[in-house]
Image (cartoon, rainbow, N blue to C red):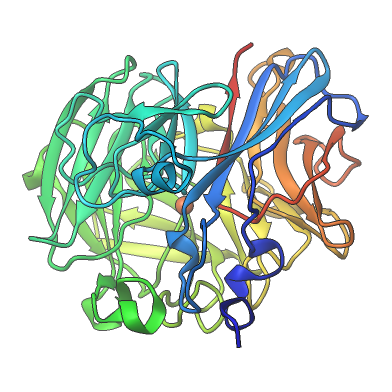
Length: 445
Ligand SMILES: [Fe+2]
């Protein structure tokens, strides 16, 4: 059997595309809101060349897909590999330059706008800066030192404009908490020792605290041959959430035991009187097989209340439907949120479902947008509508939807106040965009 037949992450719409394209003046149905001037960017793995049957989805060369909107039109679609040194060499191009990666060279997980730059991110690596047309400019160490690179899930504090981030590595297990000022300069580096070298994919901030998730996905080089990825599930290691006061040092962090689980992407966290609330997609295991999904349990949405007075974390299930890719209106990041947005997951592979969820935590209910059989949404992001003031859901949800029958993709724009309703606009991309990871809206002409 070929690698494609043996590995579902090399088949169907997980399979990489083999070229870079520019398509202008995209066909659109509906009305693209005039306030949407900028680019929707989303990245994911798109391995170049041959890979083996135990290729892990998380390790492929990164490709960024972008759609520029302005004047009510979709002006272009572009897809570009991020020029890591290996990708540049394979394309016969000069290396882009910048500081050498501290550990390994990858850039496939997230793409964010910050301090006037577009940054392509993978945990453990330095960011790559991209041009607005998605050309790779250079690697950045943001003034450094960043001995373990940077997480792919930094948080821009909507009040201070700072960027909060962290990094981690297996050797002398530690995480390092980082803060960049609004100009993009590294200002805080606080190392925190860990009992074991665990994988920390994401974290959370509140107004007063920073939360880290020490969960038993443990670095294990022996797992590479078995599953193509250097982590294994070791539940005996326990699971804890660390609460660091903002501005505090390593000695100030308090750890609280939680249920044994893994959470890729916490939705948001906030201080609530004497407790700290964090909404998380919690799955019972991860890295038990060669891929995400499969034998790993599906994530369900939970609300955790961290109680410093009792030292306990109380959890309740918000929604036991399999779902992930949690997002909120990021003006609420670190503060109480009423709404959160997720994507339903399939039982075996991440993007087999057709639904996007809007959770209303005040009313305890869920609204659904169902794209229908054969139409598969990825992560959706919230973009605020300036005409709708402070309303938390006053804006749009944007994300890519894959269409099985035509092997094409749409950028779908939903009204976040009417998630179940017809899309506000649908931009048709006459190409296949492989399923990927994360995206963001980067405003600007
Ligand atoms: Fe992620």
